[in-house]
Length: 348
View (cartoon, helix red, strand yellow):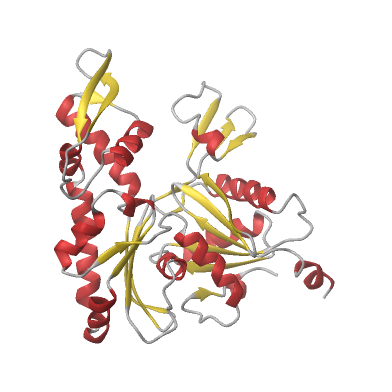
């Protein structure tokens, strides 16, 4: 009772635990933290040196004794210890350092997560300083964050393209009716650019350069006016620095494979959806969220391929975090299918 009383004074927290970035929502404050999912450690003694943006700046630039890593891959935890330490730092930062007042935490996870992966997320949250950990599926959180009323008996389709996974779901009556989670998203787009540059131009570029290309000239639907940018990398023939100009038309070719896989997943979900809900989706349209949805022309491409009007949510990047945070207000009222009340699996 004593701990419940003081625990009630702690602000509940919603966390979008993404492959590329972590967004933290604090109740009554909104999104207060948006940091890359990167940690830098000293290999000699295991010390945590930097977390987030400061650690990301070290990627590909560290000396032998320092390593900068991403502890999450393809939407799930790949390095449990580093994920726990990263979460601890972020929770400490947003809670003002008052670790005695442990918050309840809702963590967003891909819809295709396994029980083992789910257990790892819950344990990492508890070890990082949470009093209770709840899980919510990314498409549901994205729908809430986009302002969709998911409680109605009305079908809505959400396509959430993050850093490690693309989650496609049909939602009705506060639950997921049909869904698909594939490990093709922003990171795979970056890899596609790196492979294309190696194959087409015999030039090696890094992950950060690929990310910059994706944001500035990347497109999946023909642009009205072709744009280009100068790219610096290492020539694979001479081993020397080389600068070339790359156009947005080339990005269409580079993105072809990952884009087709996402379109196939969307088509597959629509095929498995009951006809009444397909009719609703046809009327309501498809909503896209996540950083990957901001690649130029994605909404136009899906509209052209499905015949269903598709829009990108206004706050696409923070949609999942905001939806996770909003669900804090009705934690006890939401269905188990929406928020997984994982307390029953936690160790008391």
